[in-house]
Picture (cartoon, one colour):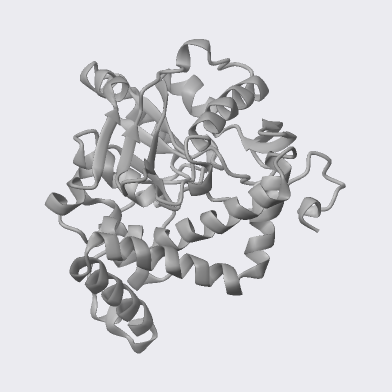
Length: 328
């Protein structure tokens, strides 16, 4: 699920209210045929091929992508070198190779999430431990469900709804109307809802009302509304302060969540720890560092399934230093 967290209350306006995009004849314009064909083919493949074949197909696509996507291979390699400076080069190379196979699988997982019927989707889920989240929901306590950009994030979001703990996902509408028509429906199955990434006032309101908000604070969203704190071995990683804004103003619970694929090809859904007790709500820098420590724990459950292809450490603390210098 493509989400972002670089938001602030003053950006929240009525224009950010999301509605289900209707079908119009304009969506059939030839300029959209590529989108319809691509998603049509994906829907066909994920529904006719056995799951084991889909796993093989996805990983093969990822290997092919690594062969031709040398720039992204370099980004993933550099990220791992920065995050794990003591890791030998051969281990880094092996992780990059596996990461690209999982990246290819992400395309298949998107198709599975958006186009599989619930009865089939449920068969690949393992509710490993979501009791903490269920307890908060039963007590009417709002939860900021802090997840990471796992390559199978689409699976995780729908899985929560299928398991009976649906929520709202922070959402950025797609610029292509045909793509948006499909994406919106794919991400609102089984009771999940969406909230515009800039509608912070509504985020605070729904948390106060006892809802679950899916939130991804693990990427580099730029200098605005960010601080520089440790993330893995990088001491000054640009980190959003959006988490502390929402936590401080809504007094919600904070629960890290994940949904990584295990060796059996099933997705282990976890939301097993409530961490707001020691969260330094009034200190943005300490709060960001605190959250990063938990995000690291989530990623280390299956590091090869995290989005290492993103330039996580591109924004420098010194504004005079060139952005992305670590990747030169």
